Structure formats: structure tokens, C-alpha cells
Image 1 (spheres, rainbow, N blue to C red):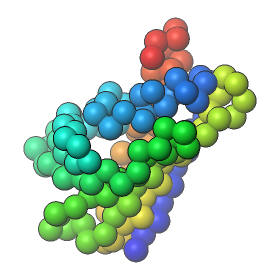
Image 2 (cartoon, rainbow, N blue to C red):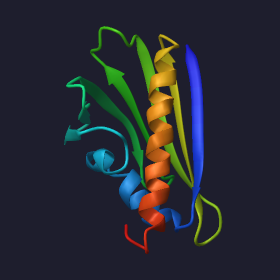
Image 3 (cartoon, rainbow, N blue to C red):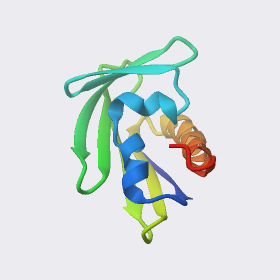
Image 4 (cartoon, helix red, strand yellow):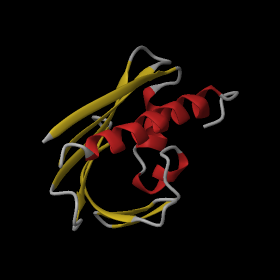
Length: 132
């Protein structure tokens, strides 16, 4: 199993960042996917390539500001757990940490590359004249 992790500091309060990151239906607003749909504890993400991934929402903890999900029913991915945490770093700054445990291991490189792009997008969103 491969384990990868990325993080970024964002100059906005953790609660404001969590309002976006902690909404499973808004993943496409900051992560490099085309769209997503959420029904109950299920989410489907759609990539620009036309690929569609089914996910189970494992944890959505607003107090801890933690979101965990697992890619399921996939011919390539045997095991997966993605975790996104928004951690306060003072009243007007936070760290967003995105980690993935995945089998097969090489898939981690793809996901963490996308996570890096997503974290950069979050920094852009929250630095653009206070637009959230």
C-alpha cells in the first residue's frame, strides 16, 4: 500500500476554509475534477477524461474538520482511504492536509498530484480579495 501526503497553509480562518473543503458536493470547486454528485454517504466524481469514480464517504466530522472517503467498486483500486484535514494555525490561518493510502501504490502518485493542484487552487481561492 502506498501512502502519500501534501499540505498547504492558507491565510484564512479554518472555519471558512472548512466551509468549502468540508462540503463533499463542492469538491469540483477546488479539486481538478469536472463535477461530482453526492447522495447520502456516496459520492461520484467525474474527470475530464470521462472516467467516473464511485466513493464512500467514511468520515465527515465538522468539529474535527476531517473528511475521509474511499474509492470503491473500481477495477484498478483495490484499497483506498483519502483524508483531508483543516487544522487551525492561529485565528486567521490554517493548514489543509491531504493524505491518501492506496493499493496499488502507483495510483497514489496520480491522486497526490491532483491533491497538490487542489491545494494550490484553495490558496488562490482564499487569497483572491477575500473571495470564498
